[in-house]
Every structure is written in C-alpha cells, then in structure tokens.
Length: 443
Ligand SMILES: Cc1cc2nc3c(=O)[nH]c(=O)nc-3n(C[C@H](O)[C@H](O)[C@H](O)COP(=O)(O)OP(=O)(O)OC[C@H]3O[C@@H](n4cnc5c(N)ncnc54)[C@H](O)[C@@H]3O)c2cc1C
Figure 1: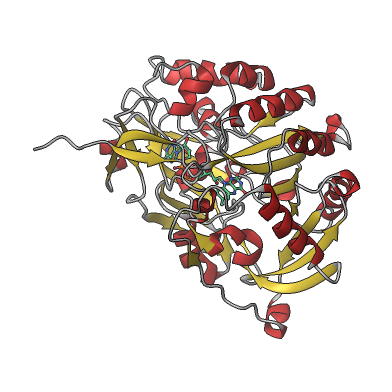
Figure 2 (figure 1 turned 45 degrees about the horizontal axis):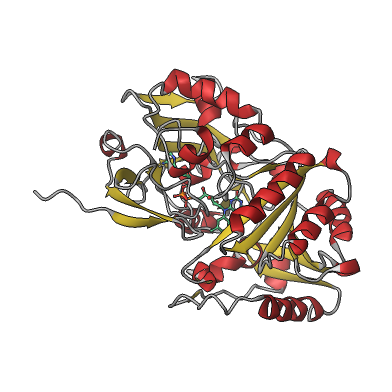
C-alpha cells in the first residue's frame, strides 16, 4: 500500500501547512497515529495545523453520531466531529438550541470545546465550556479518560480552551437550552462612535441576552468606531406567528478575489453605505437564527474575499479596569498603523471561562479582520503592546502572529496550563503549529 501523500491544510485565515489528514469514524483508533485533532478548520490561525510539515492530523468530521439525547432535560452526548449545523437540524424542530454558539454553525463540538467558544450571549450564558458536563478524551499514553468537573478536573479544565493540546476529544456531553421558538426578536441601533458603543453594550446587557456590534474601523475623528449595534432575544410563538422570518439561502464565493479589491477606498465606501443606510436609527424585526447568529454563513467560503494571501483576525479582550476609552485607543492605533479592516466586531464579556486558558474576561472584546501584508506581524506586535498595557489578552482561536514572549506576559495562566500538560503529556505528543510558536514545543 502506498503511503498517503501530504496535502495543504488551511486555517480559516488561509495560513497553511503540509499535513497528512487521517479521516474516519473511529477517532479512538485513528488517534493512535495523530498528534493533533482538527474539526472544520474554522479557527482563523494556525491552531489546527500540524507542528511540522508532513505530520499526521486527525480530521474528526466523520465521527458525527449523536450517542444519547434526553429530550426532557436537553442533555446530549455526541461524537466530537458532529457539527453545530447538523446538531441544530435535529434539535431546532424540537425547540432546543446550543446554549452558546459562535458566529458560524460550521464548527464541530470538539472545536467548540478546544477553543471554549463564546457567543453573543457571553455576558449572560458564559462560554460553551460552562455547559459541558463530561468529555471523553484520548490522552498521550493511549488511555481514554472520562473527565468532568469531578473526575480528573485538571484534564477537564485544561481541555476546555486548550486548543487540542491535551489529547483527542472523542465525545462531548452538554446541555441544550429549551427555546420558545426558532426565531429572534432583533433590534438594531445606529451608534455614533466607539465610546457610545461601550456604553450601549453595557446598557443592553441588562435586558437583552444577545448583543454585538459591527464597527466601521476606518472612519476616524469623532466618528471613530461608529457602527450598528445588534441585540436580540428569543421570540415568543405569538411574535413569530404575527411576523414569520424569511428563510435564508446561502450563496457561494467561487473564486479568490484579487487582493486589490479590498482596499481602504472600497472598505470606506462599503462602511459609509452600511452606516448611513441604517435608517431609522432604531429598527426592530423578527428574524431567523441565521440573521442574528450567523450573518457570515450567508456566503460560503467568504474568506476568499481576502485573496490568496488571506487575513488574520486580531481578537483581544480589554478588561473593565482598563477604563472607558480603552476600545477607542485600540481603534486609534489600528488607524495610525494604516491597517484598514473590512470587518470589525465589538462585544462585551460578562465573566471568565471555565478552562485554564479560556479567552474571555469581563470587559470589551474587539475582533478585527486584517488582510495579510508584509507588515502584518508588525501591526500585531504594536496592537499586542497596547493590549498588554491595558491588561488584556488575545484569543488563541484567531491568533497567528503573537509571540511566546507576548503570550507569557499577557497570560500568566499559561504556567498552570503547562503544569497540567506535564502531568498528562510530559513528552508533548500533542502539538500544533500554534503550540510551537507560542508554547515552545519542538517543531
Ligand atoms: C465566521 C466565523 C465566526 C466565528 N465566530 C466566533 C465567535 O463568535 N466566537 C468564538 O469563540 N469563535 C468564533 N469563531 C471561531 C471558531 O468558533 C473556533 O475557531 C472553533 O474552534 C472552530 O471549530 P472547528 O471545528 O472548525 O475547529 P478547528 O478550527 O478545526 O480546530 C480549532 C482548534 O480545536 C482543536 N480541535 C478540534 N477538534 C478537536 C478534537 N476533537 N479534539 C481536540 N482538539 C480539537 C484543534 O486542534 C484546534 O486547536 C468563528 C469562526 C468563523 C470562521
């Protein structure tokens, strides 16, 4: 039999490595040969890429069975390769929904645990990991371990948000949320600048379970950080009957855009149109889940818009103690660096996650798409210096350019994470391109 040939594996931002992808239904068996698991590759940076060219990576997407589902309590146990879109296809008609969802449905349960993803309800519901009751993990010495807050709690809290570095997650058990309908009452509000955004997000958090804002990150001065705030709550059956949402059909982006398409002038024009056309200032509608939760899923492969060079998403959290003007300082720096961002999102966080390395902390998070240019590492370096000064940190599921030294200074929890790895994987069997860059693993 011929040995499998390496293929080019990509993160969502289009960074790539040569790797051998093993795919199959039996994750426990295939896990014996792979040094990293990978789901649907929706992490933007290099966390799902092999540490060295040609290394074996376990693609989990064929292991997608629901193993148990208690409709009375919402408790569900499934294989780690099950995608959120497939889970919702089954549970949404029963009016049950994931308690936390990221901004795309094309993620696996394993990827949601490994990044400890947050959603538009982080301020009320916390992260996905807060709703996980049990994990089944194949660890470095080949054992399959059930872990939970009571069983092997160190492995449990290192695996949640541990970016695949504690082992292969085979199964995930968590509790779905019961919902009154499969639609959302969405309110959108035009916001004049980033300071108003910070205030409005905090005010909305008291009343609305879901909130986030789209920011025009290119217009400066008094309008810096203007945009549209979206907030939502589940609709009642009466509200849906009165105004049923229109179903959405996703389109496809068939080719890579040339890199000149997204330039400061085109981004400025798009942003101005989006901002000024939001009339009246406050709008309220009943919408389908896709419109509030998954606007980017409307175009499959939308990342091709950034061309073959790809992009990085710089996502940081600025803690409350950094003060009111903290988000303005980050956007001002971004503008001074000339890094025009097509997409910039702002959201507030209400609490820390349960994982040792979970990203959120109470405060404001900014997620900024930056097309890759020769100076992108310098842009990230400058942004990191400011985020460090403000006491914040970056999100590993998005990161591509932070250095080991910057991470160590941003996040003292790395030491505890490494201590747990030392117990479960002293030889560092599990590693990724990201762990080589950030945690000193050997390539
Ligand atoms: C359009 C878009 C919107 C997004 N919005 C949000 C958001 O709102 N909030 C948020 O938190 N994130 C968001 N993300 C990021 C995304 O939710 C995470 O990166 C998630 O981890 C991707 O899941 P995946 O299955 O594609 O995992 P991959 O990208 O394939 O892998 C991500 C990490 O998980 C590990 N992993 C995957 N499966 C396993 C397994 N079975 N066992 C062990 N480790 C595993 C990988 O090793 C890697 O470190 C968004 C991404 C996109 C593209």
